[in-house]
Amino acid sequence: MEIKSKKEKIKAAIAICVVLTIIIFSIIVAIIYQIEGEPNMPFKISKLTIISTAEGVEDNSEAQEKWNFNIWQNNDIYIDFQKKEEYEGTEFIKSIIIENIKITKKPEIGEVKVYMPNSGEGRTFTYSDELEVKEKLEYKGAEQSSTKTLKIGNQGGSIAIRIANTNFAKYVSNEDEEIKHDGTLITRAGIEKEQLNFEVEMDVIMKTSVRDYKTTLKLNLPTGNITEEGMSTIEKTEQKEFIFKRI
Image (cartoon, rainbow, N blue to C red; front, side, top):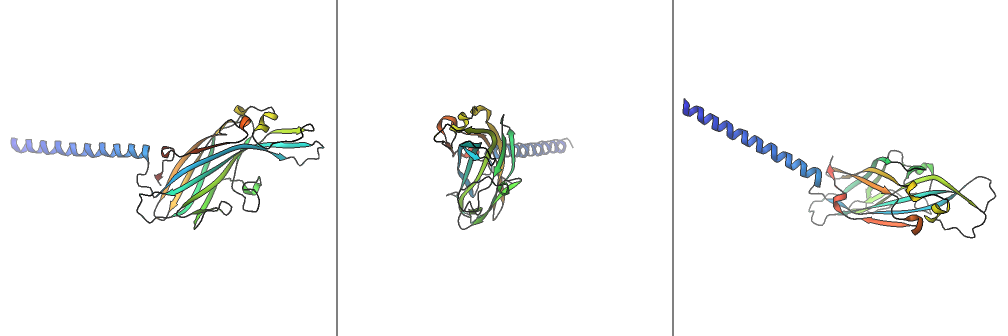
């Protein structure tokens, strides 16, 4: 009986060790997944480009001044998706969705609004109320990418969205012979760039033919010293900034 009791204790100890090993291994795997994300992604964000500048939007009032407009600070964001060379599957992109857009730190002045590309002729972005993104922006998978028709290539392509700080200042003048519509307008209006800094967070969901993935982007806007440079462009390619997880 004593020998049998010892064997049972040994078996119980082994069972406990196995269970603990499985639990520890599962915790380690979960931690790695939270840090590194999905290890076998079919597509990746190869580049995120942010173009920050400013421009004057004509005031429709009956003012007689030579120059009379509201100043808007624009941040145009382009996200490039690329199929991973080492991925051997046949998955394709069904759609890319940008949603849960949150201003986590508001600018001191102005109101932040989000716009989709203009589907008509002319400029890529305009300030029509019909183009303002209230909840989400979806690009459908297609043979080729087209920002104007909200299409993303099903084997990879590019999408665009504008995040603008609107109506934070006016510029009125009869003296200037010429006005340059860029970030230097901010200084002309007596505004400091620091007053316009804000932070935004948004979810980017990639729906493929097999499963869906999500990453959360956090951006500090505007980029660069636009009050002196006029326009600033940065490119982000570090994959650690684009951690996708299954949903």
